[in-house]
Length: 237
Ligand code: URA
Image (tube, rainbow, N blue to C red; front, top):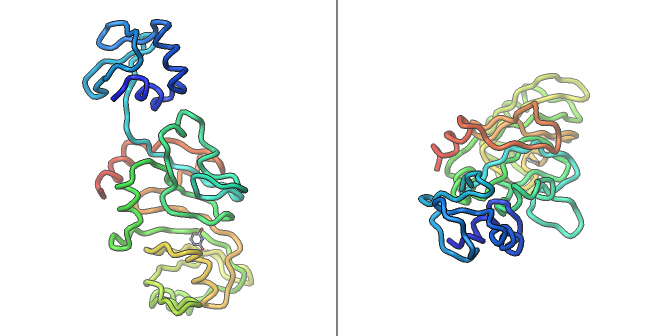
């Protein structure tokens, strides 16, 4: 891999910026000061330093975001702000993408990564990865809905949703629930409630597989996955 590409990927600026850093003798490879930013390096074996600080090469980035409402789960959009727009350049340069989609108005757990294999596993219908949502519902959610969800409700287009676990936190004209599903069809939770004559008025994803939303993350903020979360991700690949 070219040194300038590696340093640029690691957040040291554009190739032009990196060229300047190298020209200013700030970069060493295996303790030798480098003059040519185009030399080939092996990030797994060569000791690369900038200003005496080791460049820790990592090919993948794994970010947990508490998605705020009003931004879309995409990498770019002509009109709306995307979840990627919320990342600092340090993370953006990995070209990460959101794993699956949350609606514009949905909040909560969103994994953002550049690891396509992991994304594929988490989203694969065959894997039955559970996703749990907290929702506020306009309408009285009852035990009958729990049974309907357990059987698999039929959506407006005739599709029968897979069995889902519904837990009532509070019933009444406005109900609070938690629902766990294993698929991710467009507007799935909202459409499942429409199928039983009710409306989702607030939706937040709490978990995806063993990844649980870190409630200390304020809306719109994020952090890299910790060791336990990473080892779960690697275990399903
Ligand atoms: N189900 C929905 O209806 N919307 C989401 O954002 C996620 C699941």
